[in-house]
Length: 56
Image (cartoon, rainbow, N blue to C red; front, side):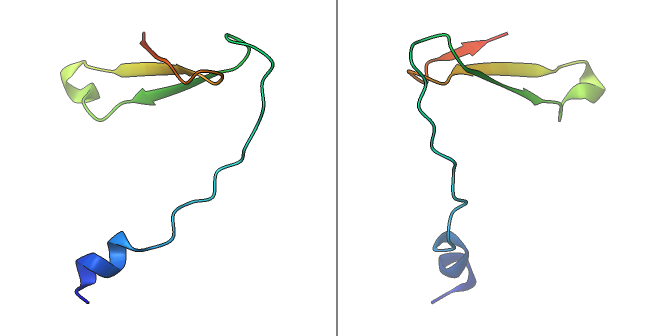
């Protein structure tokens, strides 16, 4: 195996499972600041129930 194959087969991070009673009960917010030197910041939110995406 090559180094790339070994890295791709590396064990993924375990995610915590959760249960929410309805839509809009839990939201996840994340920001991407890599382009801030040009004045661009991107924020995204995900509904934890149906996992639909919205951009802010």
